Length: 640
Image 1 (cartoon, rainbow, N blue to C red):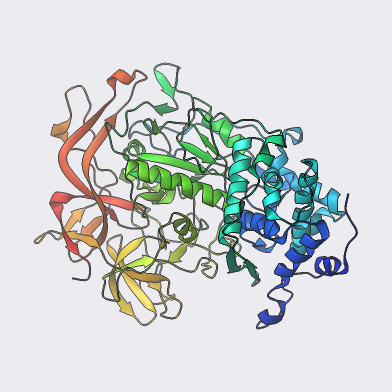
Image 2 (cartoon, rainbow, N blue to C red):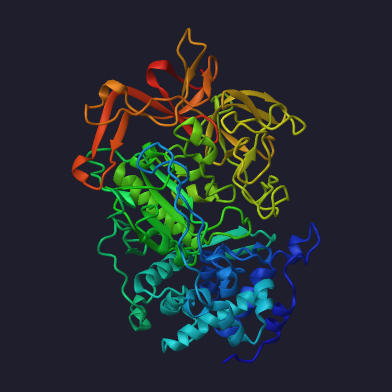
């Protein structure tokens, strides 16, 4: 039952926060959201620090202008509304046109996930209607008014505390169980991981200015120790974590992808392997699901479909593992990358800029990636932590069909901060390289085609930076000859853009503009000194050996023909339509042997790794990475 509304709380709920203050009045209006947290905390007798901590983990105190998250959550408290969450529960994810076990054309099977019925909607997707019942506020107001949204979150926390039989204490340590329940998780491990994250935020403190210009602060409480025993009375199930390969700091359960034989010699949906003993794992590939959690789980459990190692849930960061790290999942659209990578699918949608990812999922993903990177010796950089959009087409014919997720709205800068590898300058102006690093919130390049072809997408923060053929926006966009069409600003057109964290060799400067070597040509991006889009860096680069006019570029690092045994068909070492001209430099990601994982039958006894004498360098060539033969190039230090 809702208590009496104090005058302060009522005033906070009645004042609209979005667009209320004219430019230059932050001193007067920039703390309204902070005041709303204080008012809601007082009204519902929830410690303001707990309310702030929960909101930070859900949204980093952002309002997202009233737009829902990928799981239908609204506002600073991420109150979920099933109507939004049901908008698209059947995913559209597919492997692409490449045969996941080889390199011949094989159409991807159609989606088979069923849409959820209203009666099947889990509790974590129905918190907004419950908040409306508790507060007496309309669902529309809870979605659109940040102060009302905060009040709804406070009411939910207070209700959870009462349901657990706990007092409405002023001590944050007494709210562990309620915070765990607020996650909406139905298993104890996920609820505990969520609550642990909130209390870590409380211990460390946070301060930032939000997307609406609101300054919000949470003072650190380094000695705070919550009463974790409260979770025992929450009545939550135990997740099946026995088979998982996850760090103890996340919640993880085993939902296996089937390894089954079906049809005439066909099987799915992954290959058994013996990694890293037989073949080193070099990459982690970040995907988005293009569908909601329940539908995605239906997909990965279909033996006729494709697979990936992990799926991450948006509402609370819960993880499901489907394929062991030793086995090869079919997820990247490039068999060489599949054989040497681990795939992570994040609940989300590329073409919905306002369908934001929660902080809980970003943190859970970063912890998983940090764990996997340490375990397998994978460098934490953008040439080893790949987006699906940076995986190269293995052959010329596959370039146009390669995927573009997680897209320009994934916050790579924040992600690498969570990975403990913030993107910082590593050299002075003469270092010879740049690391792309725009301010995500302020960087808002124009994109089209999110809802209708050619129509502008909603303005939104982005990790992407646009490239031009000269030092100014009046010049044409850079063209990718592999795609064979004129470049556009389409949200799925990667021709003329780079992404946060990627590194390139500097090719020139002109005022506020910087040129880099990109796809065999000089590409320009705006990089003002006062608000830089990139920071200085230094490192190893490759360039063609002396006397060579250009060298070929490859989408996979396969061995030479002579390396294959008689019973394994040799795979073509076919160059892409790109070249690396003399005088140009590209950043080195690492040196790898030519390898091919032969796995074309259900009987794993025939599987083997073919390894040649040819060596390759992985390079940052365009938006996607690529490979060059070590025999064709020389390595030099940038800036020299």
